Image 1 (spheres, helix red, strand yellow):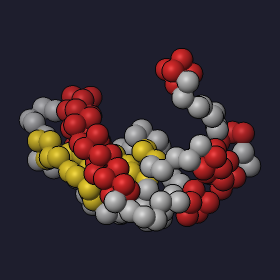
Image 2 (cartoon, rainbow, N blue to C red):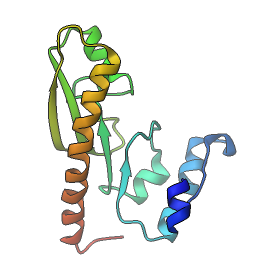
Image 3 (spheres, rainbow, N blue to C red):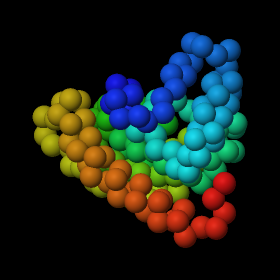
Image 4 (cartoon, rainbow, N blue to C red):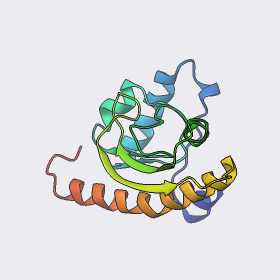
Amino acid sequence: MEYARQTGIPVAELSQKSFASAEQRDAAMRDFFLERRVELVVDAGYDRIHTAPFLDAFEGRIVNVHPSLLPEFGGGMDAIEQALAAGATRTGATVHVVTAELDAGPILLQEAVPILEGDTVDALRRRVQEAEHRILPQGVRMMEARLAGSSSLR
């Protein structure tokens, strides 16, 4: 937020506590983004589920990075813990298009991360985040190219 303020990027603080429902929060976020002509939404570390007001306004134009190789360990921010608990030998990161069905939208990119003997949650999380940092910019560029080629930008 501080970086955005210092560089003149519009900022809105839309804490869920300020709204009676997630739908009201998402409608306010939708309006803020539409007023600023946002064309692509990137969820990175956004631990909330979008509701219809937001999903409908940005259909096909929201990307998310998830800390697993979807469809494995989808549905929450505890994917790394799930992978370790399941005894998996690998996990990874996925960049996908957000849809109403949680963590089930079209996959843009994935990168596998091996789970090493003796891995801790923190050690594995660091390696998964490194993969996320590599593939998220690539996924954003893919979406930018798709949107630039589309005549149906809203």
